[in-house]
Length: 247
Image 1 (tube, rainbow, N blue to C red):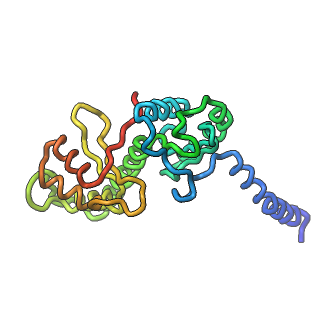
Image 2: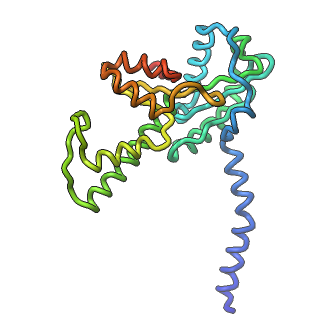
Image 3: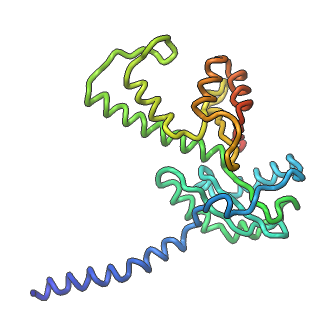
């Protein structure tokens, strides 16, 4: 064996030995991903004043690094209502990694903030629920558009009608719809007068009541095409309308 080959093997072995330490260092520089909800502190009880809680959540969300504002951040508090721990729900793309790094960098600053309302003691608040859902929706939309484009280029053109017209429309339109619907956890409606959609989700509780995403969307679309009526119908089926952070 030549000296060059020996050195190459030694370099690989040293690199492999160092890899676990490097991984641990990277993980230490990132905020943790959230575990199952039943392992986290509960949400505040009904005794919380809604306005005070909303103001606190808004201010805390505004304090987050911009890199973390499109990720679902769960914040746990200690018995004195100070921030105790933070975690991030897994999200699409590389933005989630950037958000975890940003949150780790400002962890101590967030812990040093003034205490929240008394009702958040030993409880948690969830930040950026709308923004995280919107980011996930747009990531799915981009992926499904690309999938449909590849299929179209592979199989050639087909007759396509508008999705609002009666009867069957193009197979690529239907492929896109099925891709968007697959295991979707939200209902998204275009919101009149806004560039941001209305987003509805099931409450994060075990076995939430009401219809499934598919059934609720189908039912409410059949009932009315008017935004306000469809939104009211979806909420009546057990969905919660998410509120975006004021811009």
